Image (cartoon, rainbow, N blue to C red):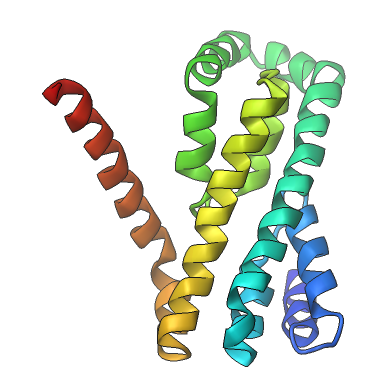
Length: 193
């Protein structure tokens, strides 16, 4: 089934309604769908590099709006389904520890992980579960998802087809290295002054 969805998305990337499909895929990927919107974004940008920034914006908007849906899933359904399961298996204490971590670092967790290939739906649902403030959630989501999709679109815009394999195989490495350097810079600035 996943292979059929992947093939459909690749075929849809060349369709006249590809921008609408990209928005919808980015939306559902942020809450329930297993395949990232990059599968459509990459061929769309390669087909029309002059529209790279438009496509990155569409993917960002769809992902952020979908993230709010994922947040709602965590916010409204966790108490009914998730919490009893955690307590049954003895993970209630770990949940409380994660909640403290999310309360303290929630927006930074979203930014650090939200622009990597880590499943964004996990973060959006967790933000809802931990009742993160909606304003910071949305702002962090905009930053994280824009960084993700604009990085992909920018690499494709400037380097074209040769960079496609690099993005598909090594995006996790590149984004993780950038996050480490970014956080290292903040730590260095904090302790230097």
